[in-house]
Length: 271
Image 1 (cartoon, rainbow, N blue to C red):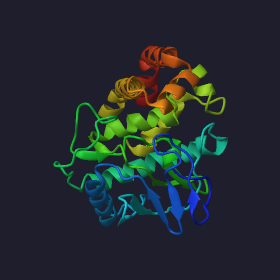
Image 2 (image 1 turned 180 degrees about the horizontal axis):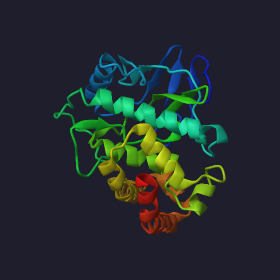
Image 3 (image 1 turned 90 degrees about the vertical axis):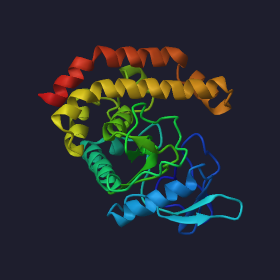
């Protein structure tokens, strides 16, 4: 969550849903609500940097009232409706490469098995690597049209690398029916072609490519359940968003569209 471009001192950073209005830049640092896994997560982020991944904020510590402090990463972050520049092929390729770098470093960092990692968007099949799980445009920092950093690791949890790729594909392809995509994305995006670009830039194996369409469907099911849980709890942010974005009919349409295009996506990935 951040503002577009460079923020000024003591500025509220906009974007996102869960922490809207609660994230501030203070000089070179960002202060935000700490996730319950903050200690394990901060340790993991520091270890990622030690293993060569510099595309994430560096934890600095906690404030007296328990908010987390992280280094501010300057750059551009796209907010919906997403501008054309963030949906270029070059931007997509850089995103795939950045995600691969995260996973290569993460594979060398043991996951803290004692931490209660959030299950909200976690890979239902589990895994030994910590996935970001929320690589949406609002959580990627760009410079000169190139993805350079990921922010907001609040939903990070153990999973498979392909799960993170599938979650990213939902936002960056996007893996949405045309009606749903039109609300937030530029016109004319070729979903099968963009899925191939993401797979190529990440470096998916043939086996992973064959698994990706079904994994995207699985990720969409998980995201729907995530929203349903919050709506059931009466969370006003998600209740309003669900109503504004077409209700459960939108989710039905997305899931039917993905199922109908599974073979098309598989062909684009493998041929």
